[in-house]
Image (tube, rainbow, N blue to C red; front, side):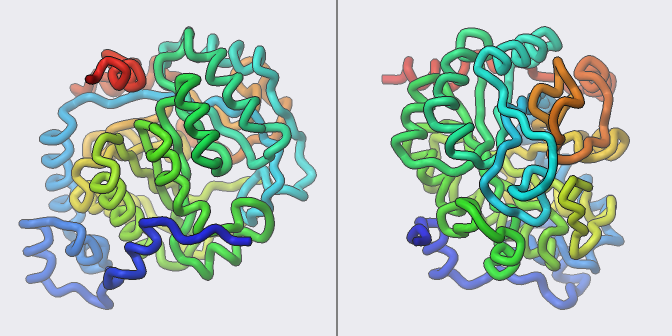
Length: 376
């Protein structure tokens, strides 16, 4: 049985859709750049806006510096398992693929984390496939409890959970939950999510609401560009989702991400190729439509492009990443989720930020869970 639509899904049904216009007139672009908003986002994403990319990027840079300053948070993904019971056509962890599987023990998770802490990280994102037995709620709680004395900021990117499980994770020390919808196009979502828990579109879409209501203080959402034939529509949907979450759960921090499809063991080919210029356009326009949202950039993207995007819109980025379980201490023992493009070390990425006049942030002054505990 599918889950009932969450509040955001009902909000979408009750509000007119925001569509990318077939063509944007110069006057529309002038107005959108002068006074950007969620409503004008489709104009900023239009093909006609691409020749004015430099102007769009400069406008996004101004907003980013105004809202976030020159601080860029650094984090590392820590893959704890690639076991999966969901069948997703684009994913290297998909059930049925003949790949090397591995689930780390809690002690192995701690050992990987110690390695990352030694490289400077204080923000870790625990990532896994969707396997409710090998990666159970009890297992995740045990991982968070074991890491809490070592890592000030812990987030998870796993399957969706119930309110009770999110509350248990928060009590153990969890700060953040990341759930990418992958695509907001319901028909395309059904085509690419063939079986398993993740096939339920509405449950997936409502997952951040359940996490926020359980006390999670950082929410991450995003879409996988290239999964749907209309990448612009997914960017608009991500922006609408982010703004809605910020209004509905104003005490939370909301981040967004627009990763592009990368090669994986599934052999999936994107429906459309998003060029580097279009990718810059997407992130710059997203910054203007959702100025309060953090924008996350992974090592999927090449170093030169990442260096440019951090000067335009990005506020959080990973560095020195591995996308396989055990990949920091025993690489090559399990299938990676996707290949990375920026292979620089964390120190090299931090040095790049400093040379560009930015402050690499390894650790916030106080973990959000501690701050919340101090509030009256």
